[in-house]
Length: 412
Image (cartoon, rainbow, N blue to C red; front, side, top):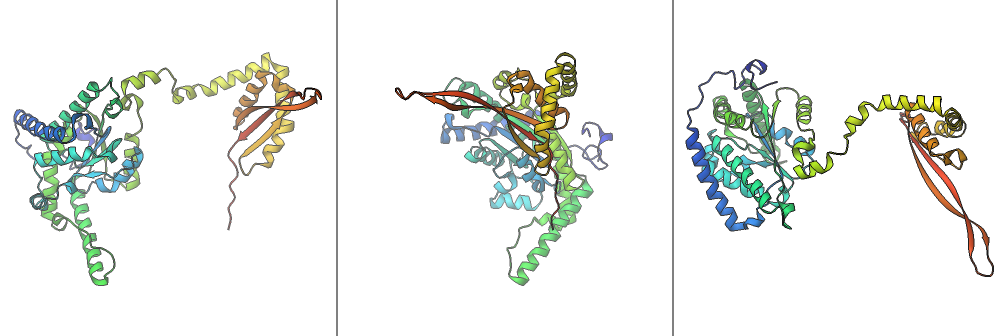
């Protein structure tokens, strides 16, 4: 689904609704953003010190219309990225009475307050590896401030690159994730949420059991819910779209069942080392082949090796097969339920390294995974009674471990 292509979006998407675009002055917005950012940055640098401005390495900017499921899917996104911190819900940061009044009317709080609170929160230790920002950025000014922040993070990384503080200034990774629902779905979900909270609160009031839940006034009023969706569409949608050319952009259709949406999210957030590692780290690792590249030809290579054994090393190959059939397979059969069998062998055939390679390949072809460990054991043979010196011989024991899919047993 391509948000640039109106035909690829569901009916009612921000691209094809046809409402007039908000009038804006890009030059003025950039100028305002620069003033706001400079003010906030000077405050942070003065309070914390430049060398202590350690922001999150990874930022996942989670946006979407009201009712798109940002809160529902946040924990899944955190888990997918291996983050243990809570998400930063921007609307919750804005708790001043004036901010609350604006939010209750379905509006948005001023950019200066938002930027100050978000940047300050991102400096907390718990967000050092990464953070999910729920509801940021929402305006073009906030977008410009974000870009300025990322620029500062890269500047600090360069500035401290050759110092002992280098580890604290890592290359930032920015993901923009937009959960999309159309206007009808958004309004329905907002009102459903309002009804569910009302029922819960009535039950608490009646029974005295549990805690009442807070709800948005817009969740109880269809017109307010529609207004809130259109505020998102007219202001936040364009702001999020403007990030598409700069950062990793993920457009998620959030209209389906939870399981389907989470699979869409997982597909988008799969690890990509070239995009997420520091360039120097990636260059150091890139000479090692990817597992996905190796396995492409693994089957053909296995077939080629086995045919080579038969045609060019037939006697040794036949010895190994006979040993597997006679000594190892009976043990494997006895362990068919557990799916793991271990056999110790001192057979001299394994003194030839090629025999061990053959054994592993034979088991691989048959659907097993075999590992061989060599254990050397010193066995006393004689003692010099005058000197007390003990003469030992070395005994070689090959420990063969074979793993495979065991049998499931239903109980009860």
